[in-house]
Image 1: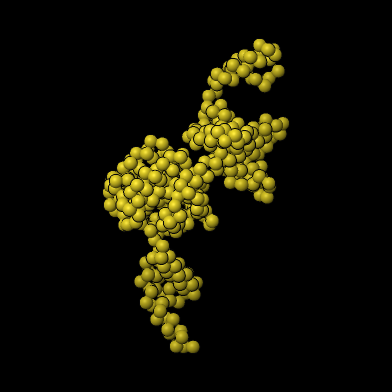
Image 2 (image 1 turned 180 degrees about the vertical axis):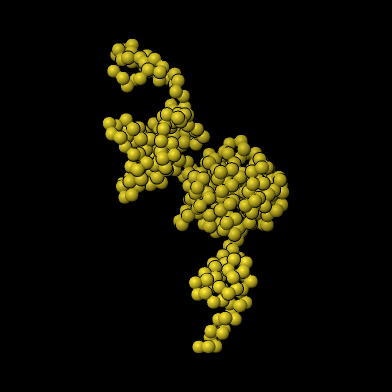
Length: 362
């Protein structure tokens, strides 16, 4: 028994410098049972983190360090990966350097800093910005490298870019990324399209940056972004339905605590979910809706899906109405609405309300 105690004492003595570094005194680390347990647990956590880092640590690049790209870079760094980043705004790159990112001043410098096969993630706006980055990247990369477009590009553009990079035997994956800004920081949802062997090269990294079950290989080139944009169309319908619920609740005859009600709905109700949670949070932060503008940004991706559905004779009444209503929200002086009011007055005698009048009175 005594020998066992002495052996344990010697082990702890060897680790005292680490204990001091963590703010635990020599005496407490050796004698106090509570501190001894705390110290041992910290060593186990460190060992596990170091072992995990050695097993799956990846050095990769991120071009575009905005809300999504920047937060994914931070998450990757937290998980022990090495991230080389480039952003047009150098101040953004410098701020991430404080979090452990290795800054690159040019796309060329980013490529040179990566080991082969290189893995380069793009989180830049769709359209021309993505096109320009791809055109810059293609001559810099080599056979076997992988480009991952994590933005919301049109799936047909992604198919074309896949062919463009394939001419140089460079892999290209279209990876829809969902979960919002918080998901990018805490664990996202990825849906990938492209060649399976290319996906295999980045799958461990995607799984590490995703929530459990959140990294998924969808199929061939284009399918990842197509799936993500259908996801966005579903999101539009859900958002519109929740917004209509808010309108009905606010116009009711009851004095309702809307944040409290939405919190209640998120505990066991049929409509529980993240969007319901966010609506309650938003109403808590902005109780007076009159202070807010009705203008809503639209990045056009859902219009692509609606056009495709229309070409394929697929009825999409909920998504279509949600998209049209989104455009309606943009302008309180919406000419179309005024034209409808004039026509209704002409053929049905319905009243026309001047600006500033209470339309609900009388």
